[in-house]
Length: 262
Image 1 (cartoon, helix red, strand yellow):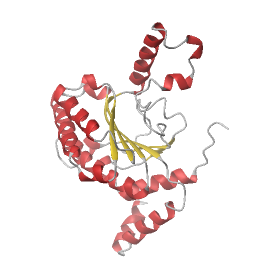
Image 2 (image 1 turned 135 degrees about the vertical axis):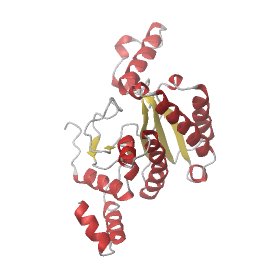
Image 3 (image 1 turned 90 degrees about the vertical axis):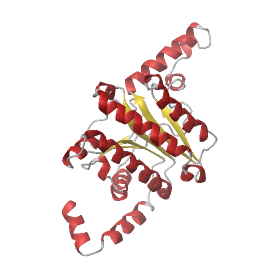
Image 4 (image 1 turned 45 degrees about the vertical axis):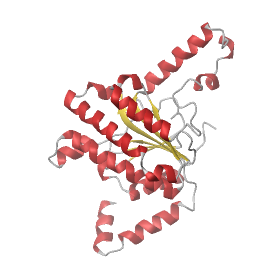
């Protein structure tokens, strides 16, 4: 595929190919909810001779583009894996840079005209109590500023872990059982889902999960919600992700036959 792209660029028809691909996928079923594991930021930075945390900064700028692409394609729910619970094991300097970036982007998005023009609601899912107070305040300010919108949902998985989510949901469910609000015999999958971080998000189960960088695993991301998600693994680092990569992933999704166990 890379050879094909180089030939297309040489002959000046790359944009025509991109336009053809967009027209093609718009004739099929566009996924309502896509989730993205934005992997490869640090490896991309090292390849460029940069500090690892600069990869996160370039990766954050790519999220801005992703939002525009999803608006254009009619995608209604986006969930991005911004910071995992496991990421807290990284160096102090890298975490400081990530926290600084989260705060900066959150405050920037509060006044981002696109979010207000297109009615984009931002929700943070994860153990926010693990974050520094100023970072948490900035994220909550962003949530509050967009809380009344419902045209597109942008979910930021921050201090997030799929196992942690299930543990937290179980604890809260147990509390309600002990308080007499829920009977043990009533507990089923639907009841438990009400206690997940994603409980108030429409179409909370992703139709498709994209992971960049060439790695092929979901790394503790949306373990409950991804039971029937289509997984697409792309051999491109996140900072280099393009609209054409998103459209290719959607095309792969459209070619699959989703049976949901039937």
